[in-house]
Image (cartoon, rainbow over all chains, first blue to last red; front, side):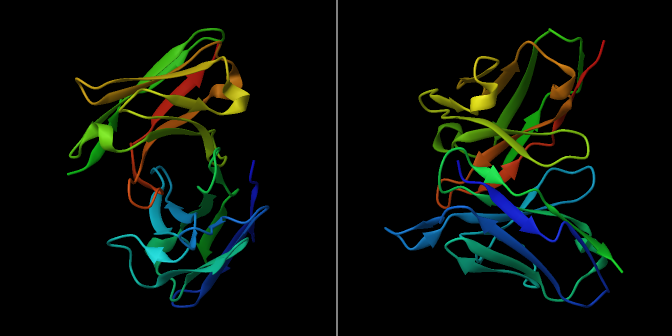
Length: 113
Length: 119
């Protein structure tokens, strides 16, 4: 099974500032046949189901604001919120869907400083 | 619009079973795999298993093998997750989630069903 880790566990960022979340997979999630990283990012606000933000490590889901961006390849990935807004307060999870079982990271809580 | 609507909250005693339903609408039911993911209070997301609505094949998380069963009814576009021999650690919100057919990430989620196991 592929194990996912995230850092930090939580972070507090001022409104308008950048937030950066890191995610590591124990094995590569890069599928060589199509050169796609099977890595997604989800946002979960309190009392709500997760919402898909990013898939293939860097492709924004339709309707997701462009302040959210994903980068990385292989085993190391980053989610960046370029200018934090109040509505971005949430827990963010990375997920590998390269192999079964698909696995989520433990989550990173983002708050306003 | 595309949506997954789940059944309501349940309260069960230890040792009992629970069945949660997830009704799909707005897309071709048999075109996308469906997953079940649970979240214990204050905890992260735990994958439980996957069902192919087309043929009904399933794969379950190893730690739940023998206790979880996923089925589907194509006539009503509904998938079901049954968990047996419930214990207090099964108290969680249970979500169904659609795997997008193009890019495989979980693009649509149900609203969640709270299952409480308590004597």
